[in-house]
Length: 103
Image (cartoon, rainbow, N blue to C red):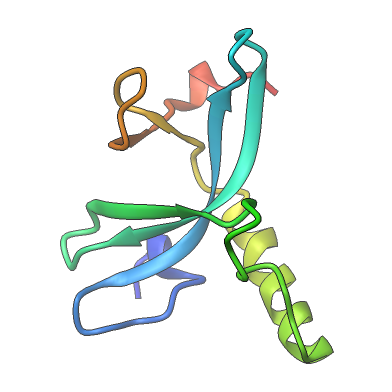
């Protein structure tokens, strides 16, 4: 299993993991959120889902053990490079280069 697959669940079409996504509010203020990033077998991002929206049930649990497991995955995934939009208003994501990260 590669380093990029530490907290993922294998599927036939690829895998997914949690990632930090850096976006911006309309006024330009940075906005960080947790997303689910979906990958193909070549480790390319093929899609993503914003788990912070009201439409998502990704951050709801009916079992405390499941909640703890999700937190464990989040703690690993927060150390991966931050994702940003490839172009403004694009749904295509790329990794933010380490020297560009503003923390």
